[in-house]
Length: 476
Image 1 (cartoon, rainbow, N blue to C red):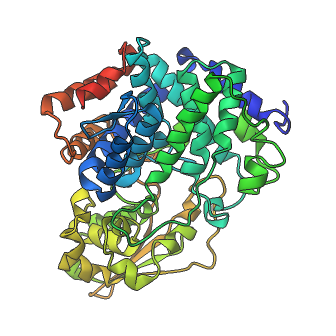
Image 2 (cartoon, one colour; image 1 turned 90 degrees about the vertical axis):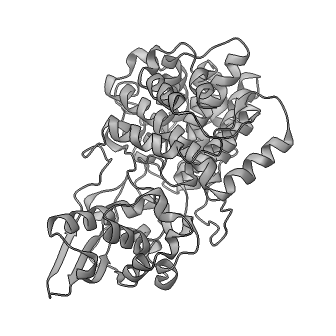
């Protein structure tokens, strides 16, 4: 096959523009329906929990414009691109959104798709559930493949990019373009226009109540809508954005020899998302999942009580493990919810103290819980000189080992063999529905229980829904 070194962008554009619903495996359709449920839930929950949610929504509302699409969780509408900015941002504010290869693929595709679906419905061009799923499948597939093609170990830390936003300009444009019915040439232009907006550094703000880190997915969603709508109107985008001398791999990732087979192999027949995607069962940064899992397994297996614990040491892991563990004093005493979610010492302390990690554990009152803070003082991190950084996503080598020393002299250790919610340890539909109901209970604009259940039913039967705008309407 062609290596992709001269026409990768064109092949991906063709793939995104022509991917039919009937080509999607039933397992992928089922997963993407769960992604829609999960994304709507965590985003609407953020509308009432995240301080920055109202700030951003108010700003967009003040700008005015056509009332095309709903701002989730709020009693307002805005132009589709602005709604994608707000809703994509909401999706990441609780750090409870699903995860996969390349970061958080749902929040850069689903808010885009639903914003445009509402706009089209208002124009008398209803989007069916089948078309929505196909559009999301195209975007998430490209996003995942871009990440899987990278050969640099632990590249997001080494090169300093946040792949959710960075690839989101491309995967979001693919989703938007598919929903607008762009032909392959227009789709290639949409990807090029998305590329020209590309950004997403890991240099993030800290210590601010209205943290803008979550807005990174919103920026790419807004840019994706802009890219597809401009391409639809005839604007020509950059060419060879994937394989070019100044394209994604050479100029941004700095990988001169990506894995072209991982990027382009079996397009439309294989979907690597199925093997890489997972749902969060705890509302914190993905790097805390492995330590949470190890602590919970040891806690349950050995019936450990919080008072039994002398010290907890987190050993090794990727660069992300160190970033979430140091400086130790600050990580043990987060002042804001987002800082607590990005702290392995604090989140580990929650898990050991309560046997679970929930949304309520990051409220202002919970951040001052003396029992959790006392446990956090016993948690530390140290490097493992023999650890190897993974290539192309999480592996067993990227997970830290958790060592718990008890007052009775025993030392227990565990490296998690996967985490709850990953493909090998999937969550059930019932668990995701419970998470959805819990998240919606925090909505800025309360949603009636009957409407919550109606939304669950519609999403469960999404491939048979004739107008997906009904899902957003019932939650508004």
